Image 1 (cartoon, helix red, strand yellow):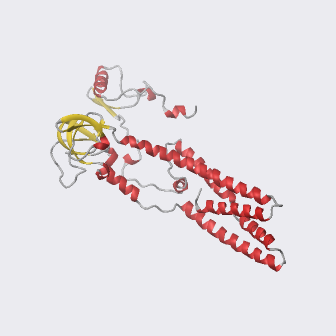
Image 2: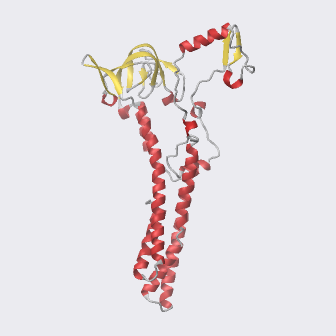
Image 3: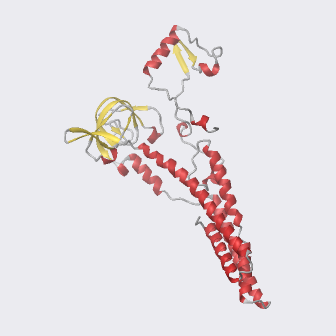
Length: 348
């Protein structure tokens, strides 16, 4: 609502009100001033609404921080808010719980953590009390990091870093302090507006001066000059660009793409190549069964419900398959989610 182009439209609206005050017999300047103000206000509301939705999604990432942590202080076990942990606290790490801070493991039992939030790798990492890589903290097995998940086992650790001093906190600081540059769309719009502004001002001054040469009064020349300046301002451009980007951002949201800045939509549309360092960056980090081994043979692990019983390479009624199925079910940590998937709710 207060960008360079929006300010130009605000200036045009104010000049229309001034022209109406100087020449109240012509209400067209009043109507134009009101229209310009409404256009800027509505487009500002649309942009604010889109950015507010993105900010709300980003705020939901605060769930990344575990709300509570079990620690030992003064020889007593107590449950406190994770944000109140300080270096030196001894925390108890349970199965399927997030690590509340950067900790050094002092006791553990078959403890395995998921570092995919830090490294992008989905393989579980075994933790122990032994420092295996003194020069590489991210790779040593006796450290667990804030925000990562303890997938298996239990452990006990001493808090060594909290808040911004944690590994994930340092990454967040780097991201927040990174310099930002204008998008290609913003640069083009700014250049266009600058050229239009120069042309409008020069044209308005020229006709204002020409009015004196032709013998018109100062009020008439001023109103005419303001009209020339306002007429050169493309008041529909802001609304058109905002509406187009908002519609595109809404379509992207159906594909689970978060648009933090509306202008980034055009940049994404201009992208022809995306370079990634690993497959986990682009995939959903989901494990899928590819092969089954039972009864001394290896078969393709196709989905029976999708492919059909006649198109799979295994017999679901065989003793070997049932034994494998029973073992997989017994060792699985999966659970049923009976809520309706969001992709089925969207059409409704």
